[in-house]
Image (cartoon, rainbow, N blue to C red; front, top):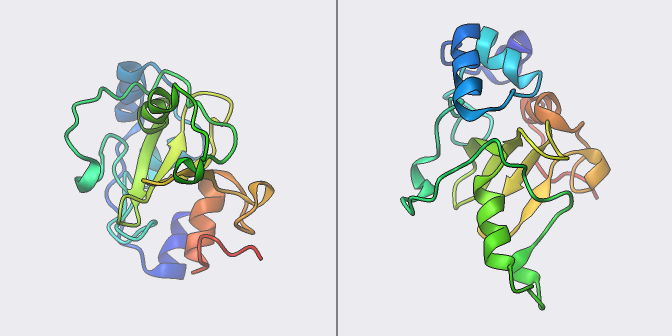
Length: 175
């Protein structure tokens, strides 16, 4: 994957963290990172200044600069709550617990891979039924990435997401 990224997009990679660093992060958060992301940060790079996404791939423990300071505790060990797209801005009949669910979408069971700006953040799901999948979570909704979910022709998961970006394809390229 490293060669593919460097050749395709001239990516500037951050140093890898190490297996020990990955194990320490996992122990602290009571999770096991999904493969191939786990191997990527341990052996290839713990972030990329060039992307993916638009403003770079964040280090495993980092949040985007525009994340905010609402002081909500992120809990990676609690399952990510969604299994299908949810556009809360278009929800004409939100449930009474929509605010609680929204808080879980942002803070449970995912690490933030990076941002395309304007509060459009890419998350890798680390716990729950969608473990290993990448989701785009914005201020208006959340959608899973991968051909079986629509929106894109790419394979699901971290490797499919990176390859799609390396091929210089738009994120939502499905007709």
